[in-house]
Amino acid sequence: MRGRVAATAVRVLKAVYGTLVAAGRMYVWTADPDPDPSDLPPGHPERLRPDLPLTAYERALERQLRTGGPAFWDLG
View (spheres, rainbow, N blue to C red):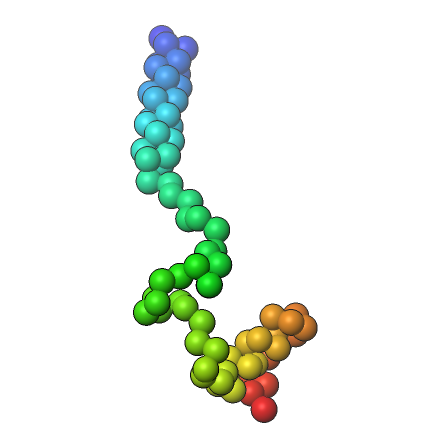
């Protein structure tokens, strides 16, 4: 009797697991890689503006990306 209950519980848990995996696969979305900024249409919010200079915060972020060091508090 105990073996039958355990086997039924295992089958139910496997079915629930399979259902959750299937539901999760429906909601998984992978974004395309970052587009090339020159490919973006005019007026797009992520389009680069070469005519505007970088702010101090943006320069600090750029420095952090180039050097790998902390730059968020180094805005000078």
